[in-house]
Amino acid sequence: MISSPNITPADYKELFPMFVFDVTKQSEKLKNSVTDIQIKAQFSANVPANTEAFAVVISDKSLFFQSDGQKMRVEYEV
Image: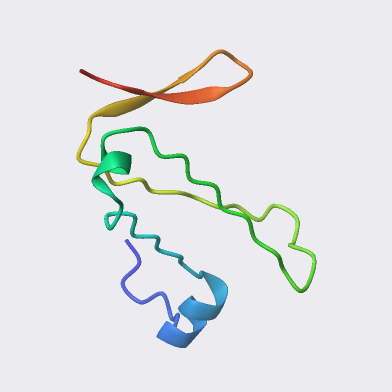
């Protein structure tokens, strides 16, 4: 366990930015159906090689991901 990573809040903001999208304020019609979310980004410079992006999806529904080897889709448990 690292007890002192020596990263200041300003460094963290610059080196490890986080983006949060709150989609809870949707109409009731959308809440009862599947919602597709696409994120498109433009950068002022080329993104460095080996850059990784992660997504955390928090939902009140139980779901799992299923892949056929080509595409991945979300399946909701009933």
